[in-house]
Image 1 (cartoon, rainbow, N blue to C red):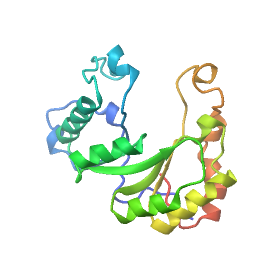
Image 2: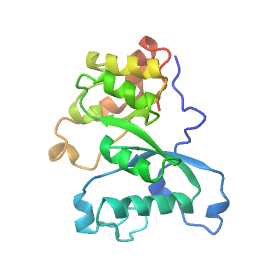
Image 3: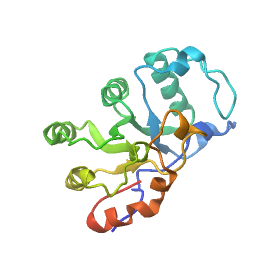
Amino acid sequence: MRLLIPVWLVLISSCAIVESESARSRDPIIDVHVHVYASDPRWKERAPNPVTGQVMTAADEKAHMQATLAEMDRYNIVKAVVSNDYAVTLRWRSFAPDQIICSYAFNHPDPPDLDFLRAEHAAGRLGGLGELGLQYEGITPTDSRMVPWYDLAEELDIPVGIHMGLTKPGGIYDAYPKYRASLSSPLQLEEVLIRHPKLRVY
């Protein structure tokens, strides 16, 4: 049983990096939690950064990608595991193949297209599964529908990123009615790791 972060996965929160004069001198970082979007309402709303309060400048997918890559370079983030929309992750990877690691994300464990995922991995494009937001659909990590996904991750020896933690305040009353914080407990992973001893989870 291994509940670990592989050596190449150094968990950071990219939105919480504090500006400093020595930003470029820091050790190389791999950010394992970057979301990509084909569209996002926050672009039109010019939503502020929750940490700095600075108004968002990106207004489309390309600008969002360019701004993200610029920040990666600024803070010596040498790799980023990107997820959300797999087609978008592939577009990002085409622009920065040495920096972008594509991960296949989902909230509902529909049966996987194993042939597609194996082919993507064999082609060097698929680097992980996740971020998985199962609790947003009221689904536990031990749900039997997850077994083919875990089996595939063990087979390909790729890590699985599972969302653990809270959602936005009041989210259960509007956007995420099925969400339950109890499903975000790392203890939910105990049986998964016992049944899948080669699984790597972050």
